[in-house]
Amino acid sequence: MTELSGLQIFKYLPAAKKAEHTNCKGCGCPTCMAFALKLAKHQIDINKCNYVSKELREIYERNSKQPQKTIEINGIKIGGENVLYRHEKTFVNKTAIAVILDLEKSDWKEKLDRIKKFEITRVNEKLKVDLIITKNGQLPDSIKFEDFNKLPLIKIEDSNFSDTSTKLVEIREKAVLEKDEKFSDPVCVYLKHTDNLNVLCAKASYYICKYANILLFEDFDEKLFTSLMMLRQNIFTDPQKPLQVESKIYEFNNPDENSLIFMTTNFALTFFAVANELESLPLPSYLIVTPADGMSVLTAWSAEKFTAKIVAKTLKKFDFANKVKNRKIIIPGLLADMKEELEEEIKDFEIVVGTIDAFAISDFVKNIDNNKNY
Ligand code: SF4
Image (cartoon, rainbow, N blue to C red; front, side, top):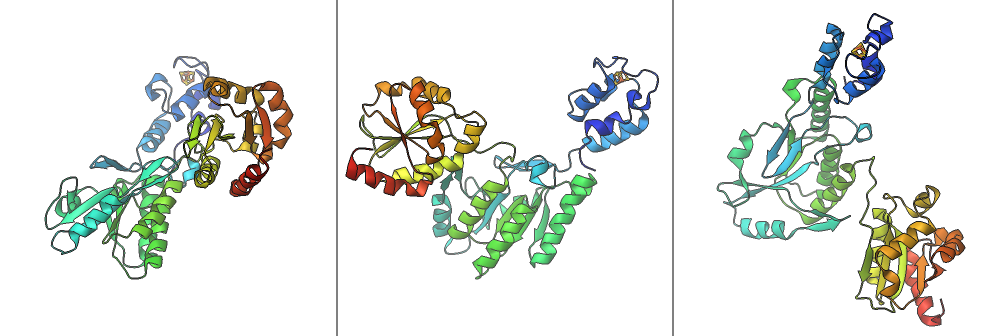
């Protein structure tokens, strides 16, 4: 059984049964329903109500148990998952990616060097190997294989996809649906290296989605790890919180007071699409990123999170009009209808309608450069 909802709890309270003490306020809440809703969120002690039945108490205590334990290895949190599907809430701790380093093998130094150099920055997050497990010795910041084996983990050696994936699903279901303590330790899958990296990548990708807490690799491969970490980043973001970047003025290729000025919202995917294009332009530029709760431009516009007033406030906050001589701001093509409204509110700048797609920015800029009259 997953977490109890307020309505499920309410069914057991006096108000639902039209019994004595209905809405008596003895718990400090105005109604039994208010108590039930608070209890579902663990915001009130169940003992505040003197009329909770034995049946409700048992169900509540069983449901309040954490399905999966959390452990910490070298500062990395592992496990602690509460749900089967990320849209129910969110997944909590991303699948740790670990590599075995055998210090008796002649190439261990070269391999360690490659692991340490491996770092990708994506959507403001630095992605790198989480844990190094050493065999036949120990290095600073690594864990000895013998010590790793003593950790409270359910270990699965991946022999074939069908067996491993079935075991992973069974363990998570037992932990989350039945709160069975025998299955409450985080799960580590050990993957042997194979010449067919595509198959290894496909299997490991599935295990990230369902439901490995650690993937322990026999070997290290930059391309494989890049794919897996990018997938992992997508799976372990909170589906209720859009990815967003800081609202500020970003600079590309050392702009000066005459450089091009672009504008977009703080939705991370839009930002990085535009930023990549601006970075690769032969011209310097600014990108004004307005606060929009991480919404894309059209969504922000329809939710009134991208308005002329918000744009004006952002420019004022960064005192932008005094920083540049250029008086033209290029807005996303999707917001062409806002041109007049923006120009009415922002007296310091003229608004130029740019491209709908980020990939078209380069051609757009070539035309500006040729005509100089955008
Ligand atoms: Fe309802 Fe119990 Fe609170 Fe009284 S004390 S209002 S019965 S939940």
